[in-house]
Amino acid sequence: MCHSQARKMRRPEVCRGQAGFTLLESMIVVAIIAILAGIAYPRYRDALGEARVADGRAALMTLAGRLERCRTRTHSYDTCTDLPRRSEAGHYRLAVTLSPTDYRLTATHEGEAVGTACRILTLDSTGRAMPEACW
Image 1: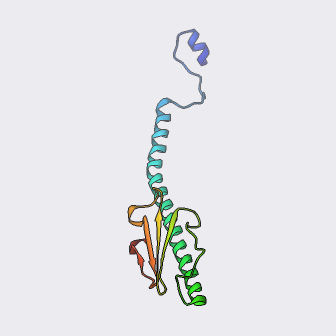
Image 2: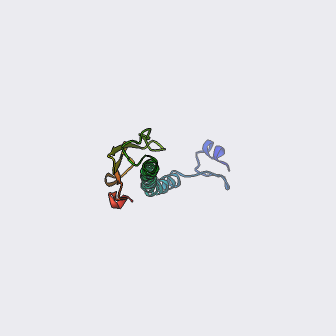
Image 3: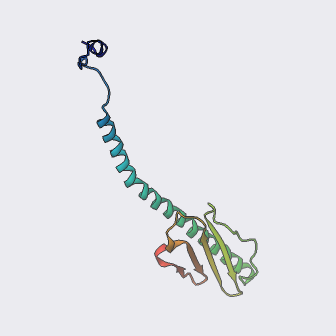
């Protein structure tokens, strides 16, 4: 007797082979998905932060290369102009302090995806990069 016939006769019988999920099975699936999301999302945020820090490092290294080429031509860092003010992907704001014989580059992150230790990256003309943990 099928479900519709059982209802008419007030009997709780169900046809064999009737497909479907019970509420308990559905709840178990939702719980498993929640656990997997709880594990995956923090790792995704960490990978996103690392990619943004790499953008800041690349911007500082590229800017340092431009300054070195400029100094080779003009024999001074402070004559170098037309320098970028943002990283290529736009996650870091770049600041440049120039003198005739040295420079200091600073990249400041303007978002929340980067850990506090790597929000401000610096590189100077001697090649010293700070903070060391971010390089």
